[in-house]
Image 1 (cartoon, rainbow, N blue to C red):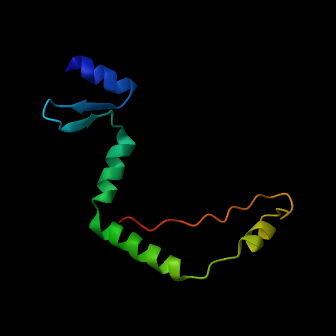
Image 2: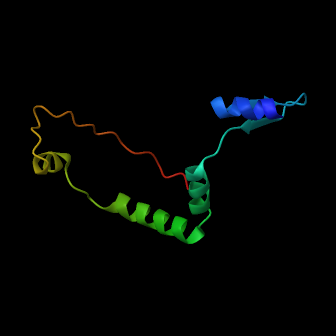
Amino acid sequence: MKQLLEMALKEDLLLRTPEGHEFMLLAVDDFDHELAKQRANEKLMSFLDKRYRQARKEKGIPIEEVAHELGLSSNNAKISRRKTGTHSR
């Protein structure tokens, strides 16, 4: 077990049993713990989901206006019009 833990410090491991069950072994830091706690916060997740849905309905600010406000020339700036995916929560 010690050898597996040392290996997991260097890279994530995928462990497979003879029956075909798979498990991940990876090092976890403080950020991972904090993220897990926040994801378990139902009130926060509900608020974020609600705000996300509201924001998707809003018209927003045209990218050209944002570029102008930032002092970017539309000739020199590459503007990505990537669509965001659906919210997975």
